[in-house]
Amino acid sequence: MLRKSRVILLAICLMAAGLFVIRNLGQNGLKPRALEPTSSSDTGDSIRVKIDRSLMTESDLEELTQIKSCPVCFGEDLCPELAGTDLEVRNVLYTPEDVLPPVYQVYKGLDVKYWIRPASSNGHVLTSLASLDQAVCQNASVFTEGEPNAKNCHVGLTASNSFLYSFILNEKSLRNLYKTHLSSRHWVPMTACPSYKLMDGLVQSFDENRDHTLTAKEKAMLITSISTNPDLVAYKLIVNQQIRIPHLNLYGSCGRVTLIEGEFRPLSKFLDHSLELRKGLVAFLDFSRLMFIDRDFLDEDFKAERKKCDFDCLEAFQTALIQSEETTPCYQIRPYLEYMYALVCRNILSDADIDRKSRFKQDQRGLLHNVHTNEEDHEIKSLIRECVDESELGGRVTAFMNLQELMQVVFKEDDLDDESDDRGDDQGDYDEGNVVHIKEVDNIDGSVSNPAALDKAEKAIELEKQALERLDPVEPIQYTPPPGEINIA
View 1 (tube, rainbow, N blue to C red):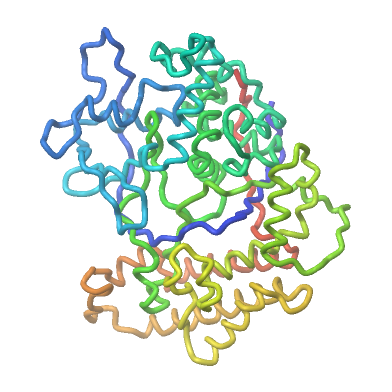
View 2: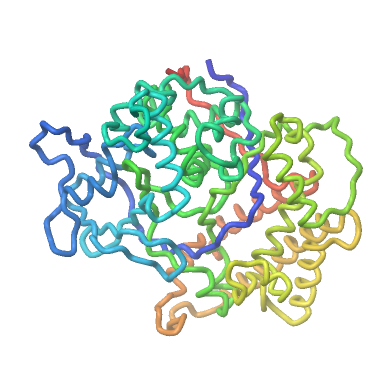
């Protein structure tokens, strides 16, 4: 029986992810239809796609999704959607803005409904899946001796006789899951400090039919996803537990592909425009290196000498935490929580040349460059510098709190200016010919000029300030488990 008490999860990002601007397409709702993997004797259409030179055929889509590999896959919740005859899947790989691995575009009419991200777009995911397939077949004694790549193993049919179905899901097994076939726990850091609460959240996230029971098939999909595609697992957990981290919409999975929000633009395309265009448009794109830490690990009795720690120091602790055979380091993480602020300040907010060098694209400007007046810009730069490299103990947290308060003032001033503007005037086009209308941006960021939205934002900021005072990087995420039991088959 699930505990009725509130459950709290703390998400700690140990590496800064890429940031992108979301363009809201206004696509809502999915119409489920039955879709089952086609058996050799099935002569019906399991996936129906309009035949066209530029569109995927039924066999193309089945090959892309690898639906027959399930339950050694990421899920089947979006297979009914892909079965719809009103969707068209383009047969040509599309590379959006040269910032992502190629994706396939799914159209409904003239509009892009979402993007299909195949496993093949990520070499690490593809390699991990191949390794897991081999482990499943070897565990089920399908491979013959001397033939490690025997073709007589159908991983989807073999899974029920392998460790994927007999796997006992608990905290210890989650922590050691990487040993099954992965070479390093660095690839799956989210399970470095597992807890009952984290496991319970994962169970709910992969309970696809919401029957409060994690079937053996659903469990196999959960283990497969954690082992090979931790980014997807983090996405599902964040959505299911309503963790307040800005992210792209995840529509679901079908076989070994995931379906994500499409038609967004990289943040770099907006950095030379005004703060009005920049604010409220940021979302994390990659959660593969996200670690979830239960607040129960934040040992109040753990007394560590407070000392200055740079990024090398933080990396050393992270490595020790991930490689440890025990969970002891998980209880020693409290003194390092504030370094999440330093990562954000250095990798996202700062416009200093020294900080740009740490980014994938060193020419990308910081999010808070040229914010307001020269005086405020100077103060913001000073606060960001102290946030990155504190000059005295406690300076980082104080700088981050002051930076947050200053930005709140700046945003309020901008909102007051907006209210006096004539919104009927022609606002023009932005981004060198790519049309970005102010109205569209307001729809994305919640239109902060709306009094109700502004009041809600102020309350959220106040809660975050209180969290900062406790040296906790994120306001506690609370949820009430659904009634009834969740059984694990």
